[in-house]
Amino acid sequence: MGTTYYFLPTRNLFGEDSVKETGSLMQSLGGKKTLIVTDAFLAKQGMARMVQDILKDSGVESVVFGGVEPNPKDVNVEAGLKVFKENGCDSIISLGGGSSHDCAKGIGIVASNGGNIRDYEGVDKSQKPMCPMVAINTTAGTASEITRFCIITDTSRHVKMAIVDWRVTPQIAINDPKLMVGMPPSLTAATGMDALTHAIEAYVSTANCDFTDPLALHAIKMIQNDLVDSYNGDMVKRDSMHNAQCLAGMAFSNALLGIVHSMAHKTGAAFADYGAHIIHGAANAMYLPKVIAFNAKDETAKERYCYIADFMGLGGTSADEKVANLIAYLRKMNDDLNIPHCIKNYGADSYPTENGFVPEEVFLERLPEIAANAILDACTGSNPRQPSQEEMEKLLKCCYYDTEVDF
Image 1 (cartoon, rainbow, N blue to C red):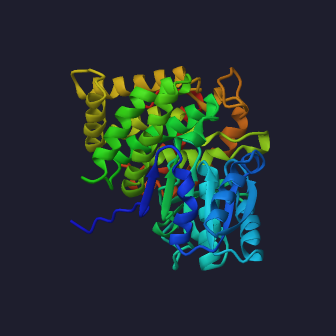
Image 2 (tube, rainbow, N blue to C red; image 1 turned 90 degrees about the vertical axis):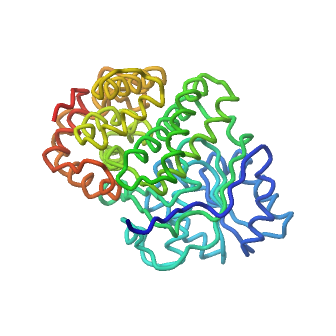
Image 3 (cartoon, rainbow, N blue to C red; image 1 turned 90 degrees about the horizontal axis):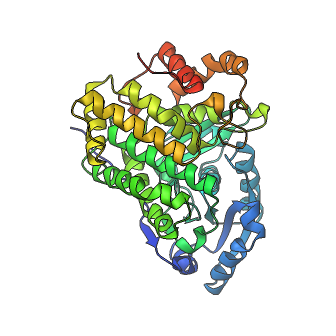
């Protein structure tokens, strides 16, 4: 058996007011002038200013880049990198959810290695560690604050690039529940299903190991217990989801993922010219039941899905029943979270609708290219069943029409 690597930030902070330690932590990393990478909302509503004040008290200068967009783009990375260089920054703080963390990672890796963010698509393409980075989380789901994954949209190809590189793992992650009280229900739902997909894909990934399995399973159980209540406004459960998504992140940063994420990456921005993105967590939620049915044709994967179903207490006497119960449970969870079951019914606002924003003829026209890109995605290699081009196209069609996967 080969060498097993395990990646995590060197320090993880949890609990109320843990954000107040940001200044001393950045100081300990040697940061003297840091770039705070965030979105326009957090830049304007005072949270970025709060972090700046904390840094100032520790003698650390800072400048704010508030240009992160949802589903961050290569142009956001380039704009942030320009601010980083022009202000002589030596470190980075990401403030927000997955979009801010991913954009910050992109800025950091290009600042250290040069070139363009597109040069780093794939696995471990960088040569030098990025500058010191502290990730301050304000959502619960993506776990980008602790992982070696960075997802950036290539605006020239309209695809999300998966950058998997241990050098983009932040050195410090801060999860302060006080910063999460403003999450809207739709974001709670999408990020929560993203976390559940992380845990399930990590558990059945071909790169799973004894260190990742317990993290994945416990995250699954916590999300089963807490996500729907968190969506419905239970703040105690929302705090618990913080921990669950972090556990799922620890699992998948090491065990890697599968084709649910490959498909989500390559469909997310593929129809942007029709007025919207397919939100990443919602895409995962729609595709996960279909991929489970596809992967369960592999006996090892089926055994692992059965173990998940047993661990969740879903019942069933045969392996096929257990897999079917798991799929049915996930579909019911999507209903409870007001997430559509397929692209055909995915509205531009991410809610279910009879006619979604992606026209059928446009989907079918772009299907071969999307399928080819999904197969090439960095997450496909650790999927338990490797799809052909034909199978990936058929699987994506099932995800468009919500039809049964029988191949």
